[in-house]
Length: 85
Image (cartoon, rainbow, N blue to C red; front, side, top):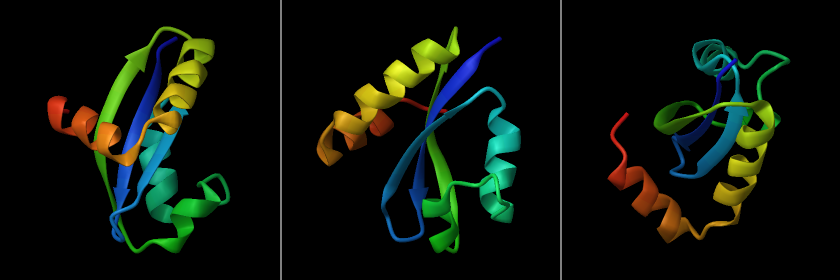
């Protein structure tokens, strides 16, 4: 099963990084602000998916998510600019 690591840009221009095995379903959960949505994302009116990458396992996705979260804002923006969805 494939997993995805993704970055969302919120309506307040903050970046949220997460991982999932079903990207469409996860985006819907965030939009609908369901109980399964990330609590952080419920505070924003809207968001945009600005980056995603596929990983082969949940373990790989979790490791990559941790790597991305450690990057500076500038490095995250470079990554987003370099990758077209």
